[in-house]
Image (cartoon, rainbow, N blue to C red; front, top):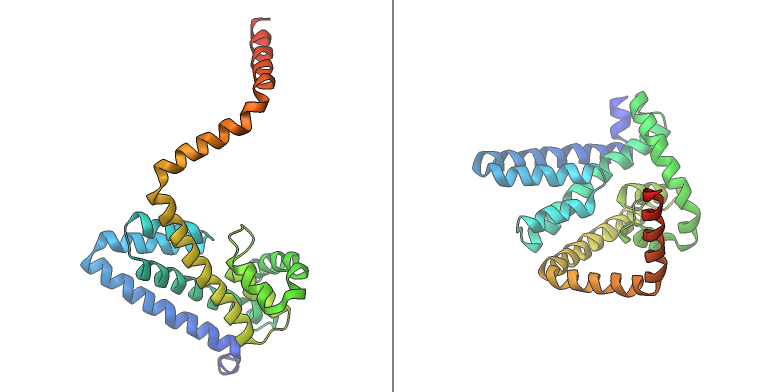
Length: 220
């Protein structure tokens, strides 16, 4: 069975994920020995990605003053690693190569999420997957995107090229957006305050009446 598994494309992708994991562990091990503080940040970034926090992972890199190249490459590497495991796990569980109950339960959830988005993306094919993965919304991302690509019967090359190019684009956009916000944070506070005032100004009378009614209710 092991021999048969490794003869499948998904089995080789899973093996690729294992190889990437070993490289990551070696990388983290090196930093644990040489720079434990940096190692902590790298681990936290990894954890953020595992729980779907692509933006949080990039934000951690920026806060800790990692350079653009190292931040983008590291975050992209983690996303690729996660996709290798989840994509391979999804396909192998649906074809009954993997029969572990907890894996199947997790993959059923992913299938449900992917199915909800499939119809919206289907008419657009490759570019639909690319945009879906790139757009920073809660249901989007490379894991669900790659599964939708599989459900749409895209070739592995088209599926992964759309998924990974979308991921890389999203990471680059997130990095420079965060950096822009960080550099201009004080200015943005004033802009935000001005927007709040503009929005609330036409409703001041209603707000005043609402506060007055609450005070009357407290005195009664």
